[in-house]
Image 1 (cartoon, rainbow, N blue to C red):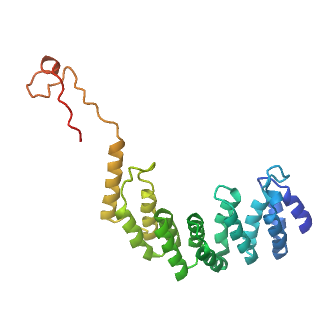
Image 2 (image 1 turned 135 degrees about the vertical axis):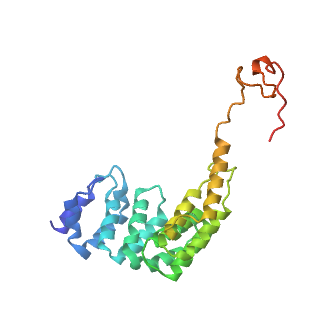
Image 3 (image 1 turned 90 degrees about the vertical axis):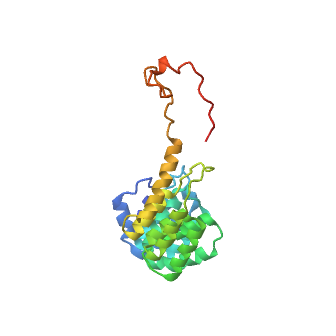
Length: 260
């Protein structure tokens, strides 16, 4: 299939990209990059009432990543800045950009340095951590991301795989406490533990494990249904008389509670 015909079919494909069509486009190699970028940027193809139901630009992300042409990196980074996490194309770029490996390192570092938005910074650092490229600037960027968002930063450090991140994550676990004023009082604890164990390739050290277990127990006990204090009529009276409750203190008023 010639490239023009393949791209015509590609523009109107729906959610599922047929494998033969995908292979037909990839077979044209670098010649397919420019027209795929044009489709990727074409806002008219993002509409759900378009014949392709908005899927062509999304599929273009995958094809461009498969072709690994560096010309696609900056347009994808631009799209990340123009879209939010709840759009499929945004998510697809986050997943596929790491496939460019070292080619994406410098563009990512430049964008990380430029952005002032915390959410975008975390997203870019997440992609950076998955490039499979060790670089001191990348490690420092991930450390900065950790300072901004401990939970997401810990996951990125674990994914990056530099053991220098272990003390930072360990300190975060040690300093973690229940946030009773939060809708999710123990949000992030399991993520921190998972990040530490993933990076160390070993179970959590005893002291950190004991601290994490104590936090879980405090939280769970606070939400555990209170055991009924009701005394059965035929149970021994709690006053210690040896009589059954019904024959002893059942009619006496209960002592006033003094609270916690």
